[in-house]
Length: 137
Image (cartoon, rainbow, N blue to C red; front, side):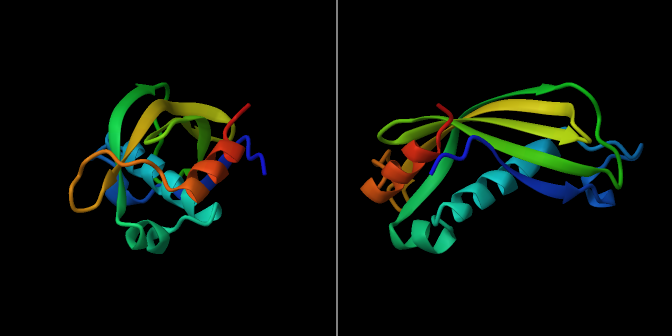
C-alpha cells in the first residue's frame, strides 16, 4: 500500500473565523489535526487502536506558513503526506487548499508517547510497518 497523499474536505463555519470572516490562524492547525486523525483511521489505526495500545501522539515540532486566507463557507481540502517514519516519530507535510490554491502549509513532527507516562515510546510493529508503506517515496 503506497498512499502518496491523503486528503479530507472541510467546510469553513462561522466558528472558524474572526470578525472579518477570515479563518483564524490557529484553526488551520485544527484542520490539519482532523486530517491526520482520518489518515491514521484510514490505515486501521483509529482512536480505539491507539487507546488500546496505551499510546498518544503529541506534536513535537510544527512549522506553518500562511499563503492566502480562507473565508467563511469555503470548502477546503486538507492534505497529509507522510514524509518519514522512525522508531517513535513521524514527519508529515500538510497543506490546506481551496480549489487547488495553497492557503497554508506545514511541516509536522509527531512523537509517540505512552498514554500514562508521556515518555517516548516506539511505535507498535504493525503500525510502523504500515506507516512505512504509506510514506512518500
